Image (cartoon, rainbow, N blue to C red):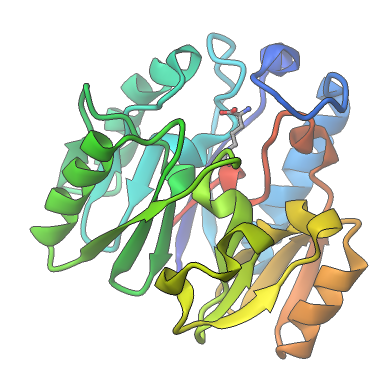
Length: 253
Ligand code: CIR
C-alpha cells in the first residue's frame, strides 16, 4: 500500500515542454484544473499528497515522476536523460530528505528517467530508453541491491519510457502494449493487452486497489474493471500533449 505522494504543480511555461505528440500546445488553465482533479483522485485513494509549487525554470517539471525513484527504504534522485530537464534533479535532494533518511543519486555518465522504472514488489524493471542508459540502470541496480531489492534492465525502443507501454496493477496483472507482448521478461504476468489505438492508456495507475485510468479509453477501462478493480477516470489530455501520462505526474510511496 502507498501512503504518500508528491506532485508538482504545472507552470505556465509548460507550453514550451518537450513533445513528440503533435497535439498542439497545452492550455495552461485547463492543465491546472486537470492537475487539481488528479490530486483529488490520489487523495481519494488514501494518499497524503505533498504539493510542490510550480517551477517556471523547467517546463516539464510537473512530470515529477522522472526525477526520483521512491522505494520503501530509500529515495534516489535521478539524472534526467534530456538536458532540458537535468536541472529538475537539484530540488529533489531536499524534497526526498523530508521523507527518507537515505537519499542516493544517479550521476553522469549515467542517466535515468524514473518513468523507465516499474516496481513489481521488490523487483524494479528498468527500461533502457533514449533517456536511461546502461550506466544509469547499473547505478540504480547497485543502490537497490544494498537494500535487498532487484533491478532488471529491459531493452526497448520506439517509446519514451518503459511505463509509457506497461503498467503493473499488482496481483500479477500487467497492462501491456504490443511492443512488449513477446518479451520473455514479462512471461510470468497476467498480460492485459492494450489495443494499439489505446496505447496511451497503458499508462494507468494502481493506487491502493483503485486504478486511475486516463479519460477517453472505454476499452481499457472495461478491461481493468473486468479484473475487479475500482476505477477512476482522470482527464490528462493537456499533459498528453507533452507525452505525459498519469504516472508521470506523481511519486507514490
Ligand atoms: C518529457 O519528454 O520528458 C516530458 N514532456 C514528458 C515526460 C513524461 N514522463 C513519463 O512518462 N514518466
